[in-house]
Image (cartoon, rainbow, N blue to C red; front, side, top):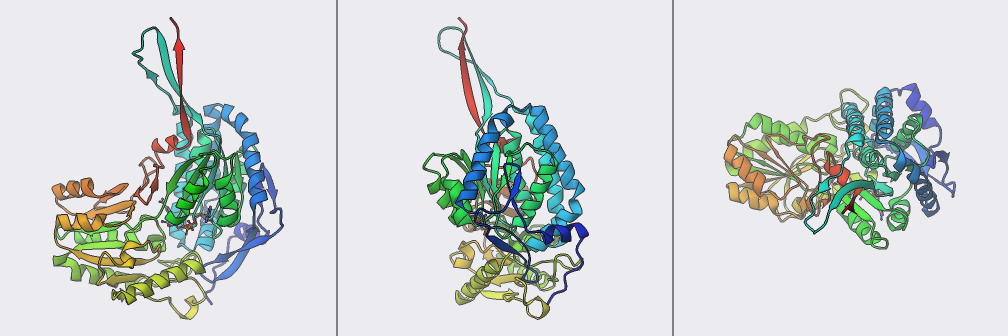
Length: 495
Ligand code: NAD
């Protein structure tokens, strides 16, 4: 079995105590006292445990968030901003420990985990800045008389945030920080695959002295805790990142009290390489576009379209790069790619590889789980399929792993048609030196984000969200504030 490098004493101490959830400022076990294990996906071994929350726990957390809401709403914007900056400073202080814990529970290499922690800090600071800049408008009125019409933006109330495991720290903060910056209180249900990172973040938020009940965490399964929050009549808003399948369930569940819903869902992003592109840059962009974070990124460039004249050579070079990737424990400095986050996700990816082979696509790199000392972990070799056509299941369904489908195209209209032939519309990449082609593609692609001569370039200020089955709403930047506020229009007759 793979050797795990020695952990920091603080990480070891954190893992040694059974995890508890945070409800109304109190650390608690599940009402049932049941727990769930968390695993190191590189070894398949348990590393700790957390409460298996259920409906009763979720209900208590919603009640605590409701109790905290009126006072939190009245905190001055400046005070809220200062508190968020305290959270950011503490995340930075515990950077090494948080990065290690992310790698240990999620599997991604340590350098990627460090980038995640850096984003967590800058994200929190970004929305701390917005607390004092949330303004309304004055509206000119045309009805007879003398009227003043102005608007204010008010928080929604109690928010529930349900998150996936691929960015265990930032996903929780993507929900919690803009929600509490705008005066809401929140209950987080983190992924059952990465709940320990969320609980460590809870400790940090307590250390920042955020008032009790403003930020709560209930760990447990989606079907129990997640479904209770989605159906709850005292939850005003669901903010969700995860699969399209669960997103649909949440839309149904929210109908009872018509809670607001925003959804960041799956993707099958095209990465489109024209023959006139800077091919060295495109090669790197394609490689990182699919293999970064083990391919467990919603925006992963999992459909690679290459202009026919350079298809064979380009795919051969991507395959060579894929074969040279060093898999291993994310805490080992030599590791370039870690394991998938869970046994279930590994099996799902391997099943798609089998489906692709049955569909007569050809795995020209990877296509298997490695053996030897990696056999107990949840690894999959970086995989490149050629001979794919866009109607195959592996080209249409989200795999969420290190698998790319390479497909040739003939010209610009063909690239647009194939790129858009997908139920998803999260992101797309275009590689070309021709500025006209770049803009024509950007205008024609059905995607929430189009990257030109880059891929997976994100910024806290840049809107993020999907077309089609990839979601509802836009997170990040000022758009993110709209997800957690409602506009009140005040009309004063002063005649
Ligand atoms: P998932 O939908 O299975 O789970 C996500 C969360 O939903 C987990 O916390 C889970 O416990 C919870 N959940 C599961 N069933 C539920 C139910 N019935 N009711 C309420 N909650 C429930 O997704 P996953 O496999 O954890 O994550 C991968 C998916 O997330 C992929 O589809 C990926 O594209 C998507 N994702 C999207 C973005 C984006 O920004 N668009 C970012 C990251 C991941």
